[in-house]
Length: 420
Image (cartoon, rainbow, N blue to C red; front, side, top):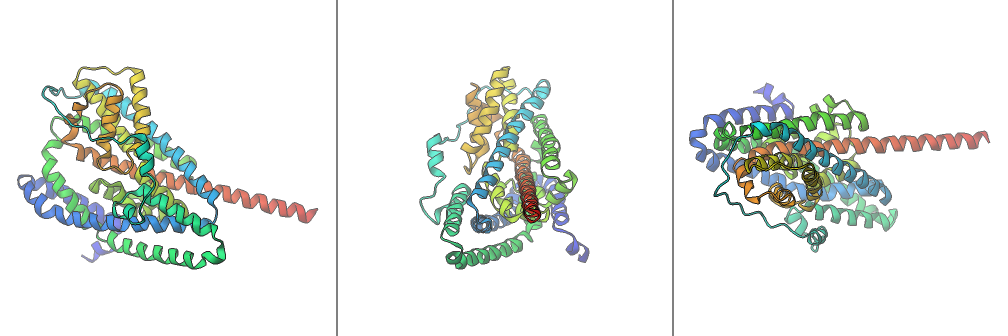
């Protein structure tokens, strides 16, 4: 028992994950019991995570902004982040389409007659833009609308900077204190992660274990192969090239967040643990406090892969061959839809409905994959949060390089003036 207590959090979560799979497979005949009596404890843990996420995002972003004391620098961080997110999402969709086309010949033939699926209602572009801006101080936190929380934190942070350093000092001290308090509360909740992981994953395995090796196994295999390729090729390359970090160190440091994301299938729920992991990897506070909440909301590389794989699979079930122009349309639609569906429950299904509609595929085809969507979701959430972390490491490294370069230029200028 004492050895288990001394294990790092990643080790405890891994043990919980393995136990959840084993117990879940054993409990398949009693799946209802697992759902009724084990899952509620996982839900309690997720509720605690969701409770802490709003305040954490609000105060960590405000803390990051006031520590920068420069609105222009915040804009620079945001610009680099958004470009990176759009680029990796487009790459993810391309990988999903490419690998799925290789799998097309071995995808299962599933009857499409009598299929029906009612696509979730999607909001118009302008309503999405309007919904980014909060109309109430408490509503964004209560509703866990991360985009609105980010906007609110930025507005308050900018206001604190603009009133002047002397007047702002009490506000800055309050923000720093509140941030420290909620970070400590987050640390207490994260210590319960192994229990939460077990209680969340065990009922899923008990309910879907047989289905995983059923008719959709090849589609799931294709999606998970794409998730793996994107992580190993795109994220490793980006972290090594732009983040100046060994990819092995990056993935080792991210293990606790990766395992939690896989079992919980919640990007926002994994946010506190992601912040902790990127902190240990050396990402600066002002960067991780801005990049991670934004990524948890709009960065959906795993979901983009899911769109590509499912589009090819559904098309093959209907006997339709997609053209190159249709595939390009899927890449563009999935990339733009990742922002358009930000913060919306069931965003993956809404995005898939938009993608299918954009190339004239029957939306009813979603019913083919809806039954195992949770299994897809576990992998795509894991990839999503890993992408958020890679952006954090990269942006932090680029800003540090710029800071070092600026200091060297300043020292050189002073040296010239002294010599002059």
